[in-house]
Length: 439
Image (tube, rainbow, N blue to C red; front, side):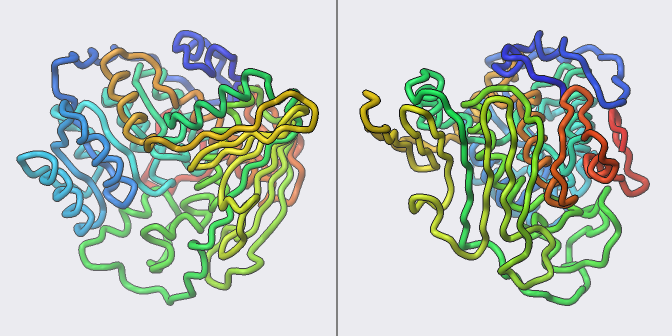
C-alpha cells in the first residue's frame, strides 16, 4: 500500500489523487467525470445485494427524502422481493428487480449504487460502477485481497467517483469523542492498542452435505469470480464469511470496524510487520477461518493487537468487543456503547465516561449523499478504506502462512515471502475479469 500522507488520511482529494501508485497495475486514463447531482435533484440509488446489510443500508438511504431506488439486484428471488418491499415501504412505487448487477450499471436512472454483496463480490461491481459513472457505497471490507482494493482505488480515481466504505462507526459521535481525546495527548504516550471481538453468537453451524441450490437462486452468478464448487448451505447466505474463497472470517468482518477506529486514532503510518496465531480450536463444522485468532502488528511507534473468539468468552472488561488505548497517563476503552478514561495514579487525568447517543449509520449515509453533490471525499473514502482493509488482510496473510510477514507499503508487497505475496491477490474464475487489476 502506498504510504498514506496525513492530508490524504484526512480526506484531501488532491493529495490522494497525487499519491504515487504501485503494485504493477495499469491505470486507465480518466474520462470526464459525471456532473454532480444538483442539491434539488433526486439521488437515484441502485441496490446490489439485498441481504441483511443491503436492506439495512437501503432503509438508511431511504430515510433521506431526496433518495429513490429504481432497481434492486440479487441472485436470489426471495431477497429481490424483500428489497422491493423495502422500497414500497418508504416510497409510493415498486422497484424493478434484476439478478445481474450489470443491468443496474447500464441504467440511466441510477446515479449511485449500494454494493452489499458477499465480500468476494465487492470489488468488481465497484470498479465497473466507477467506469459506468456511478458513485458507490460499498460495504466493508473492500474485497477479499489487497490487490482488489488497490484496483478499486485506481478505478475511483481514474473515473473521479465518490466512494464510501460502509464502516458506520466512522460517523458515530462517541467514537469521534474518543478519538479526539486520544489526539489531545491527554493519555500520554500510547504504546499499545488492543482490539477484540469475543462473539458467542457466531460459529458451530454443523457440516451439512452438498445439495442443489434453493429455487430462485442463480448460484453460478453467486460464485462469480470465486472458484467453482458444489452448492453447500454453509457456504452461502451469511455464513459465506467463514470460508476463504469468499471472505476472511472475523479478522476482516469485525476486524475492519475495530481496526478502522484504531487507525483513525493512531494515524496513517502503515505497520512494519505482522504475526498471527490461532486456529479452529472450539468450533466443529465445515468452516475454514479460525474461531480463535490473535494478530500482532508492529507499527513504528506502537503495537496493535487484534484478538477474536467465537462461541464464548466474555471479552475484555466484560465488553464483548472494543478497543483499549494504553497511554503513559491513562487508558481509554471504547466500544459500540460508549467510552471511558481510566487514569494512572498521580497523572492528573480525570476519570470520565461517554456513551452512544445515536446510531452512526444514518450519518454515514448522509455524509456520502452530501459528497455526491459536493464531489468532496467522504469520511471513509477509498484511500482510507484500502489502508484499513489492507491492515486487516495482513493479519490473515500472517495467519495462513504461519510467518511473521514484513510489509513494504510502498510496493504493497511482503518482503522475501512468495507464499505470502500470493495471498495478496486472488485469481478470478473465467470469464470474469476486472479492469485495473493484476490477479
